[in-house]
Image (cartoon, rainbow, N blue to C red):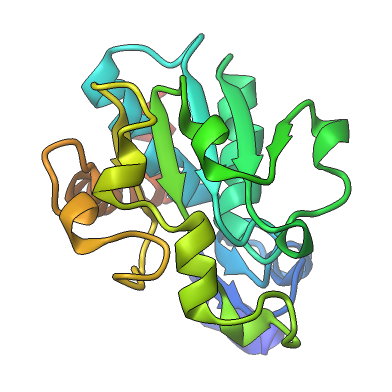
Length: 218
């Protein structure tokens, strides 16, 4: 497949694949630039770019901000890319979820680990909720969706534990009523639609730069 793509002489190839590392393998075969649009549970770089852009757009800065990422961290490529990017920009990151959905190496990344959502969101500037990725799970990681929502779902009552000006994010797709209630997802502090809007511009910019636009913006 890689050689077939190369024969078409593309400038840029965008790949989303279920296998971690697929984009790296393809990049080694092609002369074209390769954009990782998500490889398994590994990484999702452009999602992290648009998330950081959205935060900076609203807060004016990134350094020093505290972020809580809540949900299925173990199977989330979005979580990994955001953790790496946020730390690089001087942000403080903590993760929260059931022990069965948290990678064991989180503490080695300098990330605070919480198993209860209330203390995890208490003093952060941004709460990023993640869906449960049932398609990547073998089962048995939590009793039921109702039980998960009861313990880790973000609703208006639970949001009272957070700062009054906290910002709410979610990379989508959303399981409404599971990890986040409709009232919070559609509330005044939600940046979810901003993320969607900025995602178009960010990915256009990535394509433009990798395709050599303005000599790769000098």
